[in-house]
Image (cartoon, rainbow, N blue to C red; front, side, top):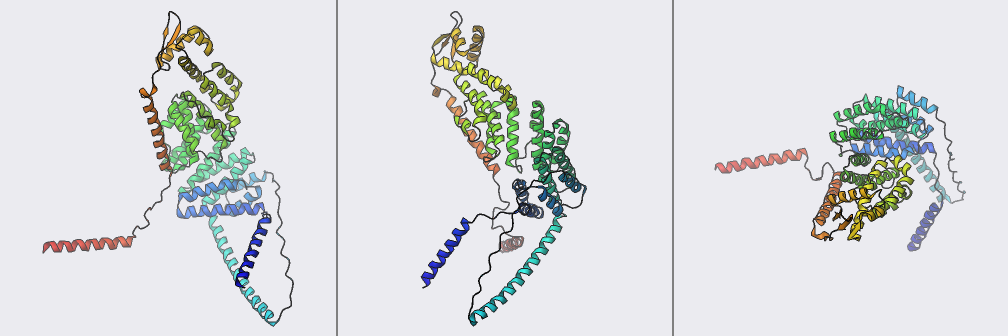
Length: 536
């Protein structure tokens, strides 16, 4: 009997589980769902403030990304009423929210109550059990009511406490600025974000530093959308100076990237290069996103300054540090510049770069450029430049692509040098599609001088004579390539070590202060006893 009962219970449980899977998930009220998510963020924020742990604050800021999708006028109004005390900033945000049109969202009714069970006639024993169950139910209901009241009192006390926490107010104002920006109310978002920056600067709390950096970011973004980026350069530099004095590493990273972005927007590469040389990026507490931005800006500046090796290394690191499941636009921008810099280095990018998911159409013009450089076809190169000139100018890579003409000619000359032992300069001019034989002679002479090809020019017969091809393994080229790969692996290892998070106390068996005093006392007694033995 026992075995059959167990089997029956298992079958009933399996049937109930299958029924639950078949039932569709119950929809949730958007306001309730948004407030629950906001409460979870606030609890993490409260934990960060009470423990002074930066990782909790970083976690709360990461949770804002999920919360951003749930923001609405109703959710923000409720959040302001719950977490923001009376202040001019609150009144300003409420006034701006009043101008936003409410988007209608589906309201879901509560699920219907289960039908009452049918009454059954029972014996006296059943009636006794019923009375007993009623008594137990009453006790359980009283207990639940008491727990509910206690929970409500604790929640009310916690909400009163959060009204006095500046971080909670700052977070809600930041969410308001983000919501206004998403709703295309740029003027309102600009006013709210600037007021938020000014309000946070009045406090001297290190737990507000990550929120202040976010406020600076959205304020600069609003100003950029208004086309007034040149007007805020002094404020950004002042904010960076303040962050350095306060040892605010997150603020330093964010504002440094904003200043570099400001310089590059107006093609001020000399100022950007000076700023990079005079400052250092705080890699300790800065997020990977900020580090990826900094590496991209640095690579872009170095590419313009003709430092292609450093630029390519920085761009590779930026591509690795960027989020792989999101930030598609940033990764497109990085790979566009990385392909051009790699071509300027004389290397051909791997074909897999151009076939990445979501990037095929964006990188197609750069694929045409890479194919022209690989073959050494100057005509195909000029055709690709003319067909996609507008796109290259929009990506701000046109000036770098213009420099690539010499690389196309060098590649073509290398192929000719390998294929012909002797060839006339007029034929070289025709194959490379150059303008004149005189230009061809000068270009060939320059390539010979730079060591691109191993040949010499016979000026009497106007021919280029190739020398015998040397075995590459008899040169130092393999050693240089091996050294380059080893250096790349070591650099990647160092970056991985820096990115790891280490616990403050790695030893779980560390002694307490009392145990340490006891140990020192025992050591002192042992030393005294040894001294006494020496005296005897």
